[in-house]
Length: 267
Image (cartoon, rainbow, N blue to C red; front, side, top):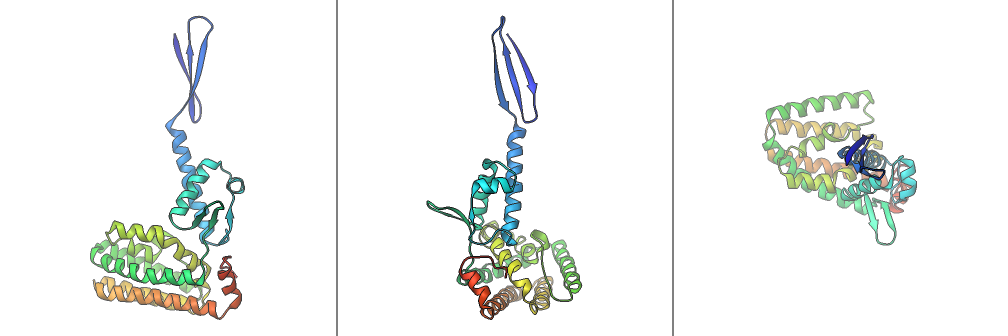
């Protein structure tokens, strides 16, 4: 009896040849297949997440696996894994007997989101002020300098932060050295906050320079290791952002209707 292995892209074939004319063949998946599936699910998670956050996929939109598999050029296995992860960070709601829909942010939901943000991010900023290394603080000041240039290039009309360490809020709370708190913000708040920010906040013309000043004040307080002041300034900053959003929606009925009807915040 002999064994022959034929190596293919993501698997190999094991040929079991007996003395005589009989033989058997078995297809064996390799670890690269599993790795490829994982990598594909990661890519889908990032792409769909970004499309939801930016409003490319509308709030309240039903997610059909067949149509999404075609749109994102994938099979249903990796897609389902990506959708489960998106549900885990509250960008997708799974409704019994109705499938999945993109989360809808009504005015009341946004109010609740910003109330919780003020409490949690204020405390996270307090902890980060104590926990940050000097190198972290220098990196924060460098980030703030980059943000000043971005706002200046827009003529003071836009303040759009990229995801992760290019986002001042993320930079600060991710360095609080409290995994429970970081996971809470990552999985319950951060991407919903980005939805609000990218769809509304940047369109409030008076907000860009004010937000930049408030960020600068927070960074200066962190540089001085004043945890009490940082906590207070972060809470005030988030409250100020909410008041600007509330005023914008209240003065623009058509946009309020879009929010209340669980549609896109883009007007």
